[in-house]
Image (tube, rainbow, N blue to C red; front, side, top):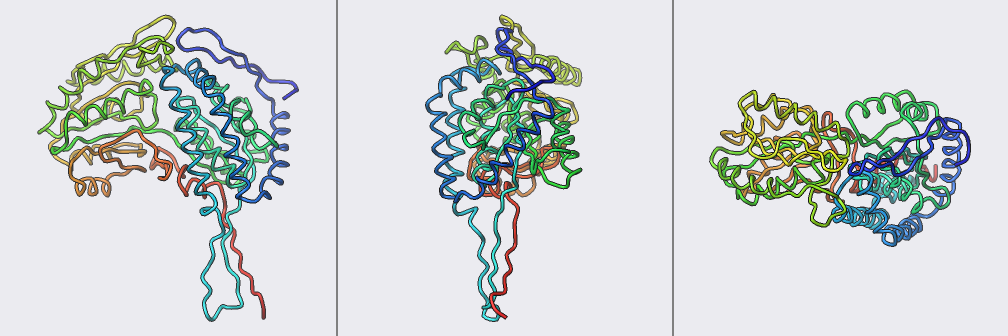
Length: 464
């Protein structure tokens, strides 16, 4: 978009340290212009029949298929995930979009109210009206998937979108604009934090979807409150898992190691703490150790690499501090435990360690890294108490062969999603939601679509 700018921001390759591209940030006048364009487009888009909106959104998905390799390469270059794994994120995007397209006609149709005999001269229904202009603020760790959930629901519901992507992964925002930007439906906007807050508080914005830190979410919530509209917040977690006495220790280890280490541990719902029943504790640790030691760190473009560099190099210091505290308190590092420099990239070794207290930082504070702290517990009740002893509540896991035990666990644990014998997995049919500091609102499923609307009650007396 032409016009004066505040400053520029540069995306950088976390492995090579080389700059990739310089981007101009928009000033408030330019953002106001973009919002006005989105408002104009909204007037037309909301009038398009829902079935036609679905077809247009589905048609735009061909962009991601056609440009699959270029998009995957951008993910790898900008946040360091191995290229083979980056390709899989495109499949996840398509799965989410296609599912929401499939259910949109039913979910977004008006809710009819049954006619009662004494109210035959009344027509009542509930319409699901789009909010208007939706600002989506997406994080870098899953740059396609995080943006996709909000974009799909917003567009299908009849909204238009301003997409502010992370400054680490700006080209992904540009890909979304290329796919869905026809008719002004989605604009990729590059802006700083100050103008983001100002746009929410003073601009013609009607709803905000934010994925990021707790502190960032609190600021977004405060800004939306000034204009009395709502927001969806996904603020991360400290997801806990419990390996029960009847669990298969080897299978549980394989699943939870992957859940902790995938994407270099940079997952909102990655496994960050594990509680293991004393009966299977030694067996579980023995199964974990060779898996943790089996990762190959290096160039994310190398097919042999299974873990890339940290996207945020400063995270390494946080992890080393957490590990040191745990060791000082009597814990033991069984594998990994240190940062490493490869080329210009900062890596952190996949790490397995034991801990003996739940109030340690490594068990309480999100670190966004490839760490798996393991604590022995005596029974289900102790595990549940420790999992609930957290400011976060995104997901929780139980490994067990007994579904009734899993059901009891699910009732007792304070989290948005409860897994049995799986982890770090989003099903488009299920709402993605968190409790406590993990956020508010839902994405995905029918509830994610409805979150992009407001109910309007229709109450007509058709005759006196």
